Image (cartoon, rainbow, N blue to C red; front, side):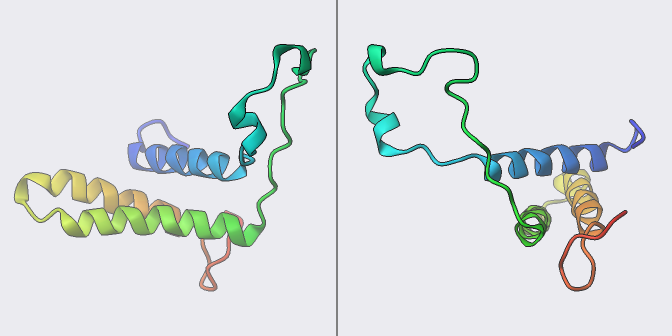
Length: 109
């Protein structure tokens, strides 16, 4: 990816962050209440939790949601002062939509 393609870099970074968040495991209620120090796990990686694996369909839905969000915000910005931001949002949405095929699933680039 060329460093000068700011729209693509911005869209892909935020979408990767959204995917990373979607892979996070939910915190259980016991963890929210706290565990006594003597019952805490010890050692390197003892508190690590396995990440969720997203299906291709889930990944495509997240990519589509990120693109849709950009297009919706762009549609709401009607003032001429926002023209640059609208163009950037539409360019970012176009980058993300290029990763989806006609059936709405991910395709190899």
